[in-house]
Image (cartoon, rainbow, N blue to C red; front, side, top):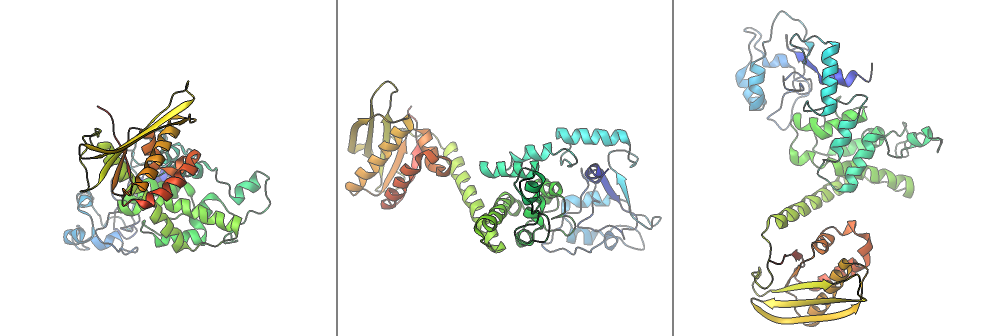
Length: 416
């Protein structure tokens, strides 16, 4: 019965009678699919504003001017389509999946099946979490955080409660607050430091709605419903990093006995989210840019030099070759060619060519340089260094050498 409760809530809507029992900003009374609260035009809302305040007590009609002052325009036609009545002293819940508003086993089964298939907009979360698991991989964030979201929804995070359940520990209490069992929902949402992080963020924080005592309701809120409740996209999209850094703060306490202040947790999350978005903008710019052609690429900065680098590698050969050429306009002003013992992979040869080119340019006192490579992998490696641990040493060299240049970025070009 409890497992079916989210299904019933997802298909329920408050039918407005007198409006005295329905809160404007938290109860599901707007006739969308699924039903939801009204969307506010104001930055700050009164959580105790009831629908009856929007109804003229004499004519039993809507106060249209007040609706336009408080509520988003797209919701006003839906509200005006409702007909408040003086016959009912209380507002009542109705089932949205039948014409009559009465629940039937058939309609409940059809709604549950549609939700699991993802056919009905915002899926409910009952005994199945497949929709949340699938959505975890669609969130625009880094791969490690996507995996972390999937682990959270799947119940795979190593909390004290789970360790005790698997007979690997004896203490269920939360190591941060020591007041309750450390469940996944507790550590991410209910523990006082985590709760403070959410309250400091700009994600819609509604008492009794979010954060709640259900992990699945909380994740569902972040995935979908926060936007339906009027949350701004730029405020909501940070939530994967907030969850990640709450978990990291918990681990700092467990393994290092280090307390991380909630404000610092939020600041780290915002910083990482901004870095991720900046990188995505750069990637999308490069993908949409037309392919660059060697020796015909315009110099983007007056006085700068275009340097193209390449590496040669063959599995059957004991030697690898690397080379670079520096162009100023259409004129070749410097070049270099060298052979050395074969590298492990072609990418190593490309990397060695870039390192040698950078050292050569520094020795020539050339610091206004635009670097180009025909190796897409090399360009991707430099854009996402954390995902290439096999090149950590080479990346350290790059980090030191690039300090000598006024601007450092390796563009990808193709031969045509």
